[in-house]
Image (cartoon, rainbow, N blue to C red; front, side, top):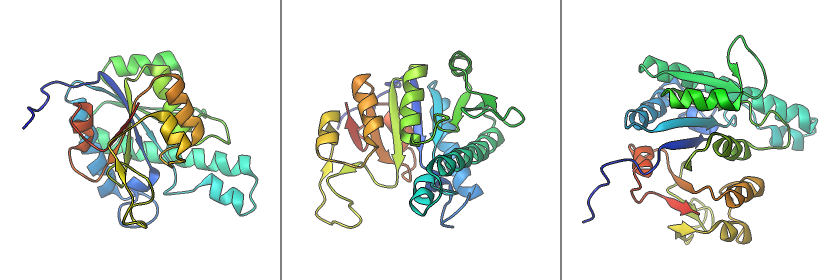
Amino acid sequence: MAAKVSKPLFKRVLLKISGEALQGQGGYGIDPKACARIAERIKEVRESGIEVAVVIGGGNIIRGEKFAKEGMDRSTADYMGMLATVINGMALQCALEKLGCFTRVLTAIQMEQIAEPYIRRRAIRHLEKGRIVIFAGGTGNPYFTTDTAAVLRAIEVGADVILKATKVDGIYSADPVIDKHAKKYDKLKYIEVIKRGLKVMDSTAISLCMDNHLPLVVFNLNVKGNIKRACFGEKVGTIVS
């Protein structure tokens, strides 16, 4: 049996969480208990000495793309989705601060009464001081997903890796919930993800990762300790590099 890694593999990580992770069993909105569970797992990572940034989606409240398909102006729908990520960011901030963590929410859309405007140097300084930084508001522009926002912020602040927390234990050749014969990949190259049309992230986000040599780890958020295991280089989920 291989010995456990005694120190973190990464100094600074960006954790990407879907908005659905906050809704718990309710199917919509924010479940405080689900929020608290995620906060506890993030705190565990921060206490290991790792600098942590987080990007959360807004799909538990609104999906701009879905509204656009139903006839709403795409830009308006996307801005509504970005505002949903700010709501989620504030909920996670509250859960983290109840655990004694120091946090900052930085948003690409200015709303200074509730969050700091995103400034790259300020974000890096917060991370250096040990604060958990939550990036909200997407990129501040319509037509971009929160996956792309996560990759962009990770590159800007010099994160060593993107940790994409999902509800499955890695990347599969097809949806494992639908296809029982779907194959799980342990390792992939970015170009393979694009060529095979694997839906782990949108093509813009994957291309940004590939062009900037930013590794990606996709794993199951619902397994306790998985975030920390990924940070310590243990075999968790699928690695894309």
